[in-house]
Image 1 (cartoon, one colour):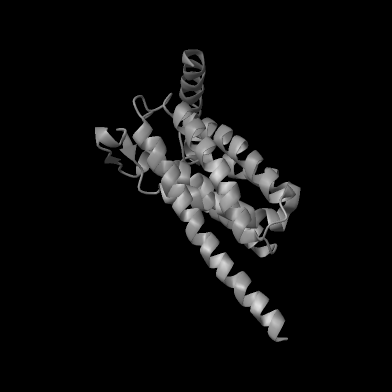
Image 2 (image 1 turned 30 degrees about the vertical axis):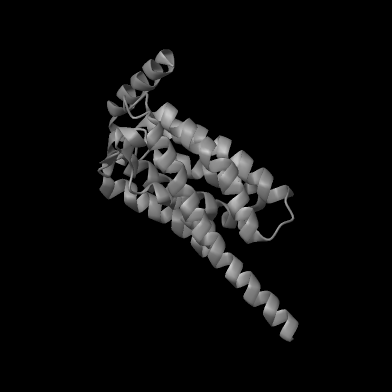
Length: 218
């Protein structure tokens, strides 16, 4: 882990000294690029995919930019990230994006990570990339091979992927932010993601019930 931390630090320093990269990371430049990519997905009829690739750089940016709240030691310690629930929602958005892109969802993930390099530290992007790779493999498998209703697949995939996503991300992000790895941070992050997924699954389940009732009435 120390070797990886050293590699990421040298990479961050090298990119930080490269004028084109520094130029692209200015918010006045990075934001229009992210919005342009989102617009390309949106106007091609892939609205969920547009939201998906836009959420990734936003979430990675928020990791360093949004103030956190200390978690009491008796709850595991660490820091609570207020936007952790948004991280849970991106796992749900991914399910809808896969309906649009099917197996090309992996390409959308790469696009989102490339955009994240404009808004975040390299160590955070690497942590996010590996966490997404692990959690999305689980998500993809559940979503692809399960024949359950969408509302149930949302909860199943989130329940399986959220713990893995949080553990991998916090574990690797600790290389850039020493001391952030704490069970309080991990558990509250997992809970926030599952709450977000649960809310969305309830909404989708209600739509499914209305659709089934409409078919019976017809």
